[in-house]
Structure formats: C-alpha cells, structure tokens
Image 1 (spheres, rainbow, N blue to C red):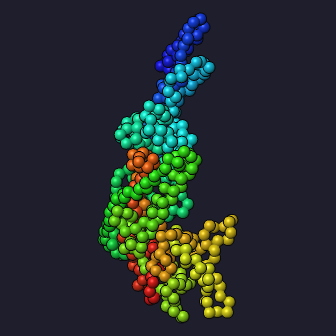
Image 2 (cartoon, rainbow, N blue to C red):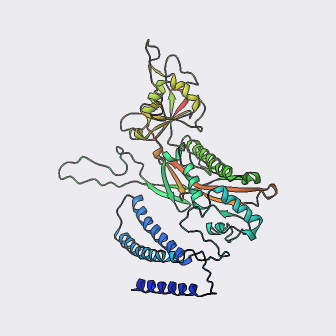
Image 3 (cartoon, rainbow, N blue to C red):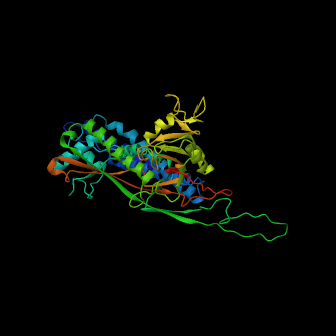
Length: 463
C-alpha cells in the first residue's frame, strides 16, 4: 500500500509540473542530480554487500550458513527486493523530465556504483588532485565524490591529499599478487586487525605426542590421549613505496598512469619475494633460508669431487629424499638464474657412453612456462643466492608458508606538500603484510635417521 501511495504522489507531482510548463511565461529549472534515487541505489548496494559478506564468511571456512545467518540474509534480501522495486519505479518516471532545461550551476553527481568515480585513469585523477591543491576554488567535484582527504576534509585539507578511487587501488594490488609473485603460491590469509593468531598442530601421525592410537586387547581399558597445539602468531609489517612524480610527467596522463601502475607494484613485489626467501623476521616476514625448519642438504660425495659452483644430478636426488613426501605434490624448485646452465648440462651417469639428460626444459609456448625436475616446476627467482652458496637451489612447498595481509588492497595516498619546492606530487603506497612458515621445526621419520622438512636448500659443503 505504501508503494502505491508513493507512486500516486509521484505521478501527481509530474502532472502538476507538466501543467506549469504549458503556461506562458513560466520557466521551471530542473537540477541534473537525482539525489533521492542515488541514495536508494547506495542503500541497495550496501544491502547487497552485506549479503555477500555473510556468504563469503561461510565460504572462507567451507561451511554451510548457520540458521542465524540464513535469517539475516533472508531479511536483507527482502529489504533489497523492496528497494529494487522502488528504484525501478522511480527510474520509469524519470524519462518524463528528459529534455527539460537543467540548472547549469547544479553539480553533476557521480554515481556511487562507479568504482573510478568518473576518472578515465589514475593520471587524470592525479591532475585533478594537483589542480585542486593549487587552486581550491576550482575543485573538481569528482574528487569530492571519490573520498575525503587524508585530513578528513572534503577539499584539499591541510595536507592536500586525496584517496585514490577504489578501482585504481585494486588494479595495483592485483599486479603485486600477479604472475611472478611468490606470495600467490603461499597459504594466503586476510585479517582486519594488526596480527593473527592461529592454533597449529605440529605433531606427526607416527609420533607418541598428541592424539595417539593404540592396539588393545579385548576388554582392556582404552588409553586416553589429547591433542597438542601451539599458537602461531603473525604480526603485520608495513611495506611502503614513495613515488615522486614531476610536473612534466603529470601533464601526460597516460604516461603517469603506466608509470604508477607498473613501477610501484614492481618494487613491492620484488621486496616481498625477497622477504619470503630470506627475510629476517625482524620488521619483515621470516624467510625460508632463515627458518628453523629449513633442511640444508650437504653436497653429494661423488667422483670426481663436485666443484663449489656446480649443481649435479646427485644433488637433485638427495634434496628430493629430504622433502617430506606429502609436500612433493605442491613443491617447486626455486633457483638462481645462474644455475640454469648447470641444469641444461645435467645428465644421468655422466661417465657413460650415452648419458641421458636429467633436466627437461619447457616444450615451447604451448607447454609449461617452466622446465621440470622430477615433475616439479623449476622457477628462476632473483632472491635465490648465487651459484655455489646456500640458497642457490631451494626445493620448497610454499603452501606450507603463511602469508597474512590486512584487507585486499594497498592503501594509496597522494600529497603535493612533500616535494612542493620541486613541483612534484608524492604518491605513497602502503601494504600491511606478514609471513612465516607453518613449520616450527623439521620432523623425524618413523624409521630412519635423516630429518624431513617442507623446504630443502643445498649446502656449499660436501657430506
């Protein structure tokens, strides 16, 4: 009944407006903005996001929706349907005002659903920010719609900074996590706080600690056991990239767009890759090579004696034997690019009359992008050590390495004050991230002396 009454009132209002327009000497100014409709669309989008958040929470933990979540989602869906019906009704009435004279002074509102807030690219946004900083009276309304300033004002504020529209932030984050990033191979977790604490069970199925199974005779009392947990706490570290951009570069929006989208993420990706491989754990992630759970495999005893700057087939076999068998399905060989000539020359039984190649490189563009050793990809990465030193070759299951990020994107701030005297804008990219292995130590096999692990590096000394 309420919707019918609203429709009748709207129809009556438009009828009155048409009657006024027919009278001579009467001019009616209609503003270009449709704020009530936009507010309804914003509310509808918010309800939609709340429903998605409920479903995402269940999907993240791989469970069904609880009864409480179902009831809440149904109520939100009913409210959303009602809003959609109201929005559709209003939109069906709006075309009747098409062609009327609009107030040229009325601000053009930016639809909340537009992720770029009307900007074609980040370069155009940057130019608008700089013009607003130099001449606040000519403020581009799209900047106000995009976000408040870093000081909480709608204009330039005390610092002249504005938040980059969400579409530009997300595109940068996707490049950080894109192809060539070790983080995408790790166990990725997202948190809204500054740290995350997760219970971990580091017992093996065959040892005597934790939950234990027993063989027992008939009518004998069952021996009790209980799980043993340790707490893995990972505190987020801050990684930043400060990118000054000259006034000359600002005059070319496409160049600025390409520069910011490529350079800053490239630097951040390289820094994160290095931390995953060799981070100290102090103010940065704890890396593979500094982890207490790393296994360092000695060079093989062969004849002739293996040289210091060599990687031979026997090393491959020995390293593979030290990797825990359950980790082999996800394992990769991380190598320094200087190791590749060793791989291409690697042979089975090198002293035989017809040695067989041990390393099979990628079979062209239609095949895998990497060659393989024992069926696992060989990935050259810059953080690996030089040939002949520990870390030149690492066999690792990166799903056993935990990456935690705060939110899904990078925070981006823009300011003209830091380099004001140089006529340059400062773009600051901040990512909150932490990382550490799930394994706190190596494990001992049920039978045998050699320990096993999730990551194996080759030593620079012989066994």
